[in-house]
Image 1 (cartoon, helix red, strand yellow):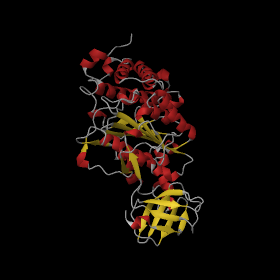
Image 2 (cartoon, helix red, strand yellow; image 1 turned 90 degrees about the vertical axis):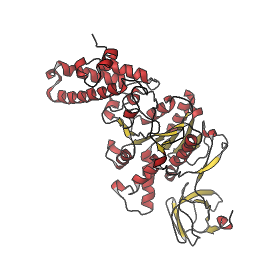
Image 3 (cartoon, one colour; image 1 turned 180 degrees about the horizontal axis):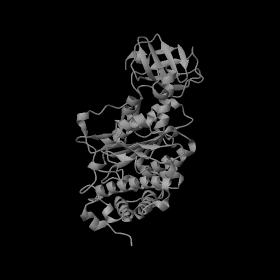
Image 4 (cartoon, helix red, strand yellow; image 1 turned 180 degrees about the vertical axis):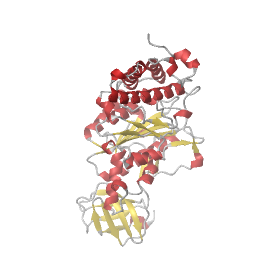
Length: 460
């Protein structure tokens, strides 16, 4: 190790929130790890945000509260923030910067990797293929999740996105072996974090789950590093250990709020709603770490969860996320108010990679036609309900009443399922045929006659 790595500087130029400026130093690198020792001898870690000739802007992970301008000692480590990775990470619970929270010692590490990861060469990417069964019919049948896909959940304040996230983590399955989950929570309350841990422990799946929990009382700056730590762990498990990794990240809105806070402290010119202009590229640096590589059996699938402020899907966070990812699962507040769980909206939700990964030889031959027909008929239900609100149900035709009955059964029987109920894809498809059979055969124009003859069972 070179001598200048251990060079120590005393005194700060300026401190603003979790950020400080130091001058009259040797030239250092961007994203470099920094050690800060305060007057009481407590060690804090930091990362360089901005560097120039003889100066650096550093953000401190545990904040700058109690630090002295004159007496702080600063050491630059000439390396980025690293995380140790191995199979031993599975079954463990860590905080937002990778320290164990489960009372056990640090696990054995096979190697240390840069948390910022490396961009996947587009020519090395393999097209996402083969589905992940979540056990939720609204997703498996209508918005199928594919290995290597980025499929966010758009939620709102008070909606059960945390329940859905843990349910998917408990129930998700893929064909073959080597499936695991990396669960990331950012800015969550203590009771919510305890619920996550308890849910995985009681269901017996904790041994295949690696958890990173950044609590609400932790410095908000920590949330910027938590997903990167988790994704570095996922990359090792997927591309070095050939595992199929599902990464669930909640709540990305808290991540973006932390990013806006740092941007404001740095005095950067804000863009839409005060978020920095580089919000799109920053989110892409996380989302684009999902995928499959040619010649590698493993995969990383991302299920980011975000709460839309005021349920506004045009807000910058869901808007930019939708540009980067391959579809979205949208939760509907009106359905949740009627007691439907999971309240997954039938029309705005979609999976753009679904069409290439369902059908004969992949799921079931009738799957594409049935999903398309359910979507079309539910769209007709929405139109019929709007018409009924104007002219009254008594003025509707008998066929319209059949559609209203189908809509009620579709929501209450097909979309709605208990939190502890895991439906196989076969069961979901059969249930879809059960509710679609309420409608006359000549209304099912998107399904081949051979499938109708086999699965259609009209109600008497």
